[in-house]
Every structure is written in C-alpha cells, then in structure tokens.
Image (cartoon, rainbow, N blue to C red; front, top):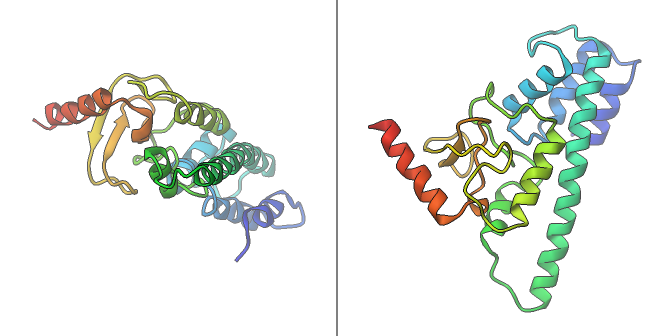
Length: 200
C-alpha cells in the first residue's frame, strides 16, 4: 500500500494520467484528513477551486490542493513529534498516568479527524495548516469556553457522530467537534445543556 509521500509524488507527476493524479490525491486523505475524509476533500476542492465531483480537474488545482494538505500534515507531524517527546520525558519523570489531552490524542494519532466535521459540507474556511495551528495552541494552553478554531461561542452537544468519540461539543459556526480537553468544565456543561434545549 502506497504511503502519503508516494501518493503525493503521483499527484505531482505530469506523466501520470489525470484520473490517477486525482485518485492519488483522494488516497492521500486515507493517510491524513484533519476533518475526516469527506469534509477534508470538500474543503480542499473549495479552496483549490474545483468541484468535488469533477473528474477532469486542472492539474494545477490538484497540486494546489495537495500543497495545502502537505503544509497541514507538516504542522501536525511536528506536533506529534513534540507530543511523543513530552510523554517520554513525563514517563522518565515518573508521570505514568496520561492526562485528558493524551486520551484525546490517542484517538487522533496520524492526523485523521483531529478537527472532525461530521457534516462534510460544514468545515472551517481557513487554510488547514492555520486551523491545526490554532487547535494545537489551544491544546497547549489552559482550557477556554469557545471554539479554538473560529472563536465561536455556541457549542452544541451532538450524539451519534460518525467518529470516536461519537458524541461531544460541536461548534455551530465552523462545524468542528471541539476536543474536550480544550474546554472548561463549565463550557462542556453548557454545550450539554444547549443540546437539551435544541432537542426540546
């Protein structure tokens, strides 16, 4: 099975036919898709200026979409290296029990669904790398009460998400499943209460 870098080379290779180049970009999302496969594809298509169903995409647009995905992947891989180094140091210092960020991180290792968007048409509009930088910054500071990506204040608790965890606070503005560790207990409680009000 081809890895991300091998697939990226195929996307860029002008000797490959257009169908293979488009397919290879889609396959890259099996290795790295911050919003989930469908939402990340929708995001990349929107940002690069082609329709998600277009089978004869301008190769330059495919490469633009890949460039954005690669930049975001570099941001996330650097975070994972720092995360692994921090955990090694904590274990060396005797801190064996992982915290809530560690629990969340285990579910997103590799970058799939780190900013999960259950509705593939509702996702942040900013570049993927910027979204991940904001999310990482939120994971590294004290919990807050708003979405770390768009600063949206309205978070609604949703169940039956097509992701793990299958329930949690979703930002009504940018659509991401907000990682629980970045929110205060009061913000989490308010999102649960909002769910009850919405469903009532």
